[in-house]
Amino acid sequence: MILYPLLILSLPAGEQCGRCKVATKRLNLKRYCNRDYAILASVLTRESVDEWARFTVNVLAVFKKGRESRLRRGSAFLWVQMEDLVCKCPKIKVNKSYLIMGNEHKDGQPGLMAGRQSVVIEWRDDWQEKMKSLQRRSRDECDDEEDE
Image (tube, rainbow, N blue to C red; front, side, top):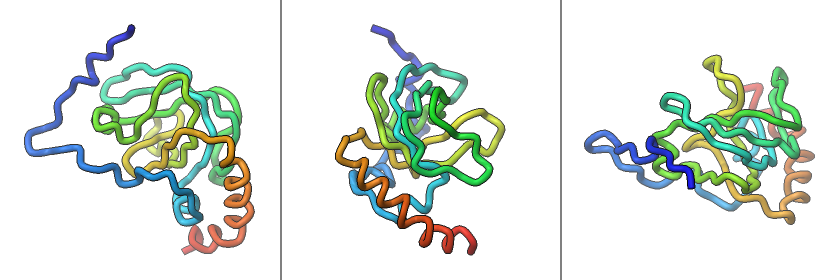
């Protein structure tokens, strides 16, 4: 058993975890459109890097990515701030597969970012058709929102 001492971090006085803002099992077009990427990924490893948890994931499918994104199938890093991980927001476990919808890192760290605004839910095979449907619908409807 591997222990992660940083997971025992306490939150600053007066702060509490509260509820995750996107703790949901429902997929809809608005959530899909408001994220930079949507992937199916299997979580392989986790390690602590400063105030971040860096997960190595195997991207099994890319449902959505930004125009300038280099995101593709294969190995990638997923970054989660340790304070969010302590609050299980998002809740991620090694050796599980997840649908992850979030935003790409903008501050120079390589890889993807997940946090309180991200959708991270354990993958179910019956979501494959739902994701294809969201991809088709987003071609018309998401573009309008991005241009504003």
